[in-house]
Amino acid sequence: MSNPYEIYDLLQDYAASPSPVREVLIGLVWTYCEAEAVGLAMSPGIPTRTLPWAGTLRGKAIAELAAWVRDFDPYRATIGMAAINAGINRLQLPAPGLTLEPKPQSLNNLAVFEHFLPEIRRRRIVVVGRYPGLDQFAAEHALDLSVLERQPVPGDLPDAACEYLIPEAEWVFITASSIPNKTFPRLAELSLNAVSVLMGPTTPWLPEMCHFGIDYLAGVEIADNESLRQTVAEGGGVRIFDTGVRYRIAALTPAAAQAWTRQHIACTIQEREDLIGQLGRFPDDDRLEAANARLSRLDTCFKRLWDEHPS
Image (cartoon, rainbow, N blue to C red; front, side, top):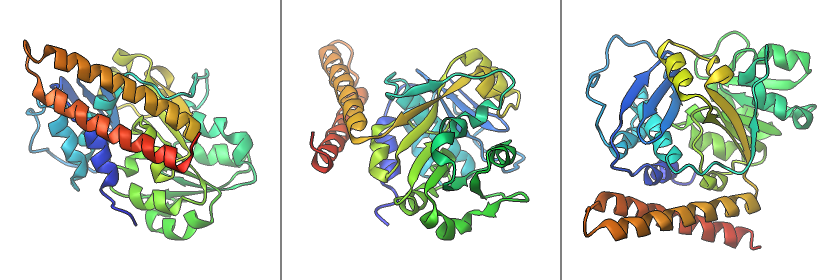
């Protein structure tokens, strides 16, 4: 396995912002972080009576909370991931792709599987993570599908089965909550011979995910922030897909990843120039350092893409 911390270094580079966090909500299913933008991550689902830092997170820099993603404490890592997504989403550079509009009286949390249905029929499929309603969906469409879950229910397989099933799979759907729970590096490595989809509201919108062998990102874009916030705060789960968020699918083909990386580079150069122009009057060295780090990361990403797929 290559350096397992590579993904976490990448995420922190994008979230290296001194902007203060306005609010953190830890719902039963989703964790919500609002700063200049909103980021989500799936809550750990592990019972706890109290959290030692409750009441202290508002006002902390995004970068400070983003560093928690490296932690092995599930709550700290989840908050770190939500902060990272808030930092990434402030760039407002949506991936080139397709937004899946919700359908009335439909399980909109399964929209990604429905979108890929023509391609995954008669394929060996492994899904990492339990999605409500997936068993019925798979039965209705006669899918050859196995579910791996850290907290398995009847019909699931434990996550250790990944070593046996994923290398034989043709399609692998990986929950992005595997990033904060630290299983992502190995799952991505095992999925290199399959078509892989990184999915869920925890998904970071970054073109560099292609370097980990990910073929598609299936994350979310926020449609109604107030509805999303209320649903999260009131313990909602799949309901966020009905009003608060929409799934968006982006193919990480070499051409698409190169184009998306160019967008990020142009945006970051403009941000850096604006900051340099303000330095004499409004010193903001932290933001400038963060922009420089992100630009260096993007340059490396583009060179790697070009070396692998010159166009």
